[in-house]
Image 1 (cartoon, rainbow, N blue to C red):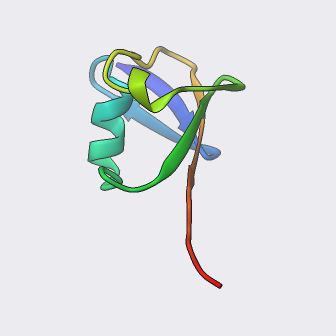
Image 2 (image 1 turned 135 degrees about the horizontal axis):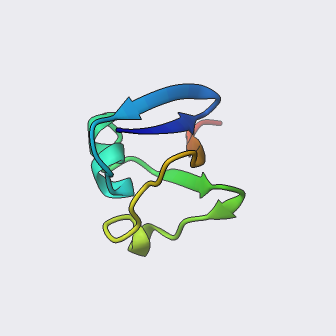
Length: 67
């Protein structure tokens, strides 16, 4: 079991999960998002290979268009 903070909310997962799997679970697949892990931006190209670890702090921002 790992515990991570996502936008200030604590979430637990039964096993390590990739950033891509987290995005999918959150229903954000295909959306324009920026993700910061422990203060560092995670490039979209690394979403599939980055595994979350115990205590990670994530900030997820969704780009919203408009005028």
